[in-house]
Length: 394
Length: 183
Image 1 (cartoon, rainbow over the protein chains, first blue to last red):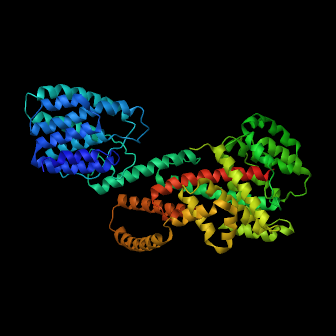
Image 2: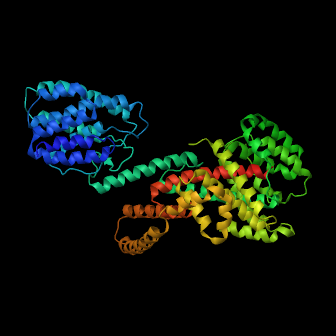
Image 3: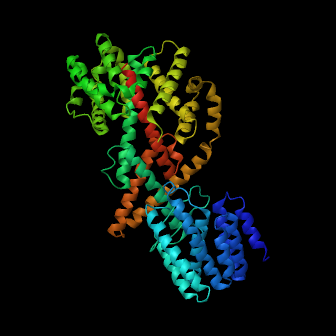
């Protein structure tokens, strides 16, 4: 049975894929082994590291020279940390934010943590998360510090066999590391580290992980939804998001209705396809539209500013020229009913087109005016308008 | 985030193809039908553009194919890929487990509300404020879930992701449709 552990650990680390599961297994097996035989554990851990192929000859030397049971275990933990720290340092830079972490790093941290907890006679935590902050740099520096201090102290330690400095060192390190976090990419198990002064039971840890994920996504949403920057707190942001989604959906409905009315045969030119593709080139025409709009029919004056705002707020700016051309074409066309939907009051609050916010406000006004202006359509559309009105109210 | 102009082009292509397919089916539709067709085709176009990678797209397709009236139309719109898509969508374990979830959630809500009523009188203000904040958030997430297609059956983290995606899609749709109407 003494041989079983190293082999077990070795074959666990073999596939190299289920890193998280194997780390957990490793943890468990190590806890068992601590009580039995430190030496074998030590060797097993060493084999483990070699199996990972990370620590190499330096570790081997160090490990073989320090052959003591209990301090050997601590040394082992410190060694793993020292050897893996430079690795984490090197890899911290190219890493994407909070996405990848190494098995060695995890392992070392779990081992370190274990030793710490063993001192404190705590129970081993099953779920730990090592989530990465912007304090990545800080951690790498600290790691370097730790590394140096560790190496120097470790050399002296080969002669002394006191456990106390070890204890202090490890506890200091773990407490320093406790204030940082890093996230695992594809967790089957999520490894969380309890921060200083926070509850350590698995439920609250899992809860915290969940909360962090949600807040991360909220940040993305903040960038996407306009006007979310001013609001802080989940409830306010959720409110903004809901309003935005609702307004977008209403816009879609309105536009589809408009399309259906304007285009009885539902045939669209391929011209507009091409027009879209020359978007970026059209952005230069933007300032000319302001002047040209005054020349057109006053009924269309209301539309142009909207277009302008839409154009610059939307994802591309080049909608202008095809729209303007289309406008000129449609001036002569008899169908102008959808334009009557645009109440004059919608656009009295026009500001220089700069933000999606303003556009949104206008559309809100538009939507509110929908209810009012719907009452004056021409005959063929009454039935449909009531239907659409109903739809929009819901 | 994906390039918005690429998404737009993709959407526009699919939409126009879908519309053409619809119009080839039935020549003279009245306005309501046209409205429906336009919306449906737009939805399905975008949903198929995502190829079933996101949950809301699957939900959209599922909803569209659920009613028998829409089903034929939807399948026509989706075209030859429809079978694959519909299969992928139907393999998602949507309906059965979620009814159980919904039932259990309702029971939980009822029990919670009664517990809160009891607690409210004896509890200090801070905790009360906390409770109120939580309730607000819960209400709003519930509303958001009703807005995003297929959102009822998700937990919060996935809901956020789906909302992100859905917002991007809605924006694209609005832009495309708006530029289409002005042509």
